[in-house]
Length: 233
Image (cartoon, rainbow, N blue to C red):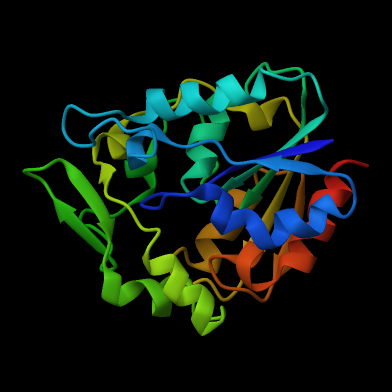
């Protein structure tokens, strides 16, 4: 059994974000992998207007999913749900999708489908460079308020500028139509409001709600571990 963790926007080093839950899953014989996303600069390609976008992220995740026939749960977090909708489509080894405070798009929908006319106040957008990121002064209070100070400090070093192109790119498939799915609603999330999450959760097969912020795999790894293990049964 294995888990492939698809991280969210504007961060790098996905294995670090996932590691508290991964360590607890390893105790149950479940391995984990967190593919690097090109649009976040994790593969060395320069991000920006002409840099890697959604298709590159999809290809990176799909390559990991198709590299093994081991039964796999894909844990898609936030923007990771956009990637996973396409990357996991038609992959026989994928047995379950676990969406965490995630976007859950239909074909033709994109990140911009779910946003407002103006960027969210916690984002810093540079149209000339073609990138965006999370404002450093908003990271802890918006996304990590229920995490320890140590985790908050470490997270600051793992934010990234990301290609703006990912906002407009539509997905071409919706794996959750064919693959069993579970959605974790994070009721105390200050980044993606719980009501918006519950709207997405209506598209999933099972819904679990946690009193957690935007990163429950950091703040409540035991709870997330238990949901992941249930996805294998």
